[in-house]
Image (cartoon, rainbow, N blue to C red; front, side, top):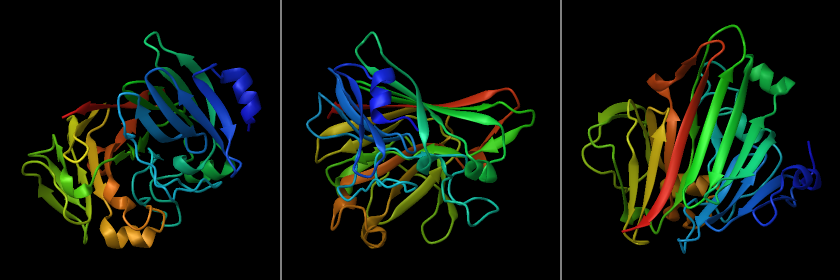
Length: 303
């Protein structure tokens, strides 16, 4: 893997983008331009933070107890779930939500957009271990564009001669004032799989509000979602394409306590996940020689 110094020489952008080695030994990209600041760990291509300059509070939440460690996922930010979402269909020993969020990625391109946003593209590094879990010829790229809006593009290209099927998600944690004072709209009328206490199929009526553990996979929906935050008096818009599932998740107190890295005692109250995904019946078949891109864009605005 390239060192932070090598990456700065090849890909750094003076005053906008630099690479630093964390105490854990992992390399983190730090972005600070006229529109926003952000950080991204090269392990997992894991966006850890994003704060537009127009906002006094970050939009992407990172647990105050988050730890960076080789081979471990980071609590918060926007983990990349790929090439399956949830548990593996056949191998219980394989990691939940796939391996993409815990393996090295390499920088392939950086740049400044005409509007002042900063662009960074990373590619997942294959290894014997990843090929043992995913024996398909493909490339996986993530492009992150950091500005007043945050845009993420996850592209899977099938470079082999046979078709395959993927599940995926950008498992984004959003910073909110309090979980009891937010609503998520845009999904009224959608069917969803309720994963709390088993798995049952239900239909959403009206906005989503929260009074306990919530883990839902909304299916067959390309809709924009909006997080309405009464305490912070702002809206977060989640606009997507190439995605037909939306996952809405909050662990609530009992599960958050068991996790141990949610920012005890009440860090879980200051986050909610609204994930753009392709899961369950919305998994994606990618034919040989073709590609699929999941795109999501986030914007924050005052209420």
